[in-house]
Image (cartoon, rainbow, N blue to C red; front, top):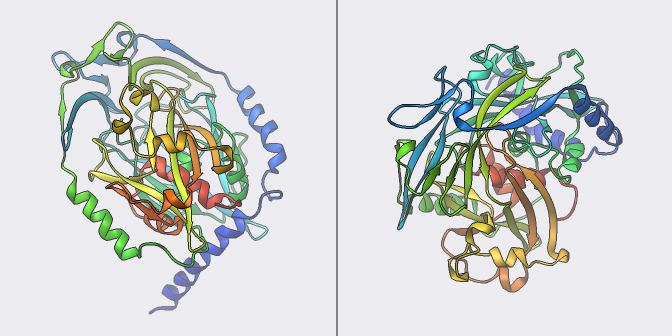
Length: 458
């Protein structure tokens, strides 16, 4: 083993402690004080002109429905397309619109040590689908089309730190999925890169500790989905003395779940998707459930391109994403669900105990509703360990809001026989899996980021 290799391993072993120190630093920081965040964030909103207006799909400049297939695409052939998808998962079968975006984007956060504490460079970024437009995003949040200049806009700031291996030290780098219900096999490169460079100041960026970001995760619609996804991949150390299942048992169970699900998908013309209605304004389901495809015209003063039009997926109703939490032998565990979704690259990923839009199931009898949904919905405030509303990726989804919860399970509930596809897993085991691609879905990663950055008691 070379001296360089030993030094690199020593630095890797120090990483969890450095991240823990940053997580515990909340009230002070070398970057921005937490009490100054609101005024800075409000100033960034006032500094730029942000508008989003609905536009009928046929009037989207630069977009058109292809003759014959009816697929909705951009005239450049890049960015993304809306096509049809036929999905079969076991006995269930349906068709739907789906976003096809085969290129891999970059979600990257720059880290730098100030006064012995790691800080992270976060951006106040506008996305047209965000409920409050401006949210805290990674340093770099860009599709391949954007950072290669297809939009003919300004260059993406700090991009070279994530595309040039020599610019900094990589602390995390993993391909992660996006929403398996709305994207077809979409992945992003989730990265954290440490730098020692003196970076030029930029009014739309600020340095925050993990503890400060964790505090902001308790607020509704502040930290965006991409930032939450990247932070879930950080090497955060959690104190654990044991687990219900060993790592080997967990991986074997997960492999079995992937093997037992028969998931078949095929792309079909958007014009042929059954049970979906095409109007002059949007595309929606005949029952008025699930989501609609709509169009928007956008103006954003601080984006690489300051005005554009695009389609967005707009969910019907507010989602619910919740982990049941219980301590076995004083060790916290989350109840995970091995979910099969049509857009996943490999059939199954681990999701929260409950992940659904309750309104989509309100017409069904209790036995056909998602397991544990009723338990989560009727949980009293004394059992809720975390609750906040977060939106999904605002570049593709309009007002896609879910309530994210950590709910304590009682002894009887925790020790009851579990339905197929559910298992108790420690946060530490989930963090280990999050360092590898396509184990945890994006909803689970949000709640894992909360658990990893939270200084409260699970």
